[in-house]
Length: 111
Length: 114
View 1: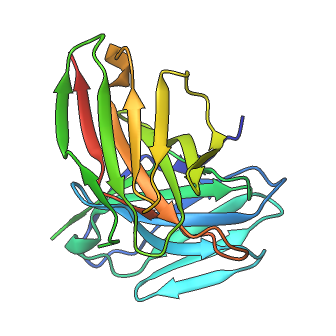
View 2: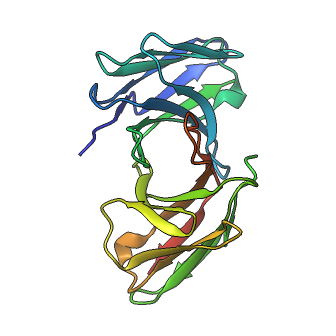
């Protein structure tokens, strides 16, 4: 059974704060690590698909790093805005069809 | 938005009944996966269909079944509903080809079993 852990479970920050979350996953049989952003009542939106150890990806104020040898990925949000409020999910892909998801980090950004 | 649609949005059923949920894939995608998200958990893989054949299954009983049609739309059927089947059901479409890992999700169907 694959175990994907995310921390923290939830986070409340003030507008302008920078924040980061952690995703831990098995370091064996690694194929890809996905990050999704999921707003209430909407579809999960793909942020990043990371495949290489040491990968760093950036989209606007959001960036992510990947360490496949030790089995973790960090997601960073710089200067959080209220519209960043969402649940952030990571998912581990072994190349065998299914994504294995963590339980997510719920971010609330107060104006 | 991803272009993946699901219907209905919400559904209430009684224990023991059967339910069919529908998913329309993003144009050009030949693979659809279904996930169940129970409260407080991440989505869990139910099964995947590729070119109308089941292509992988998670830890769900046989009363969870599916279909994929020639236009790549899909159905999830659940028989003999149990209270624990109450969850958000997500479908995700993708293109099964080398180097392509992204899955595009629909907004989900919220099923409540009473």
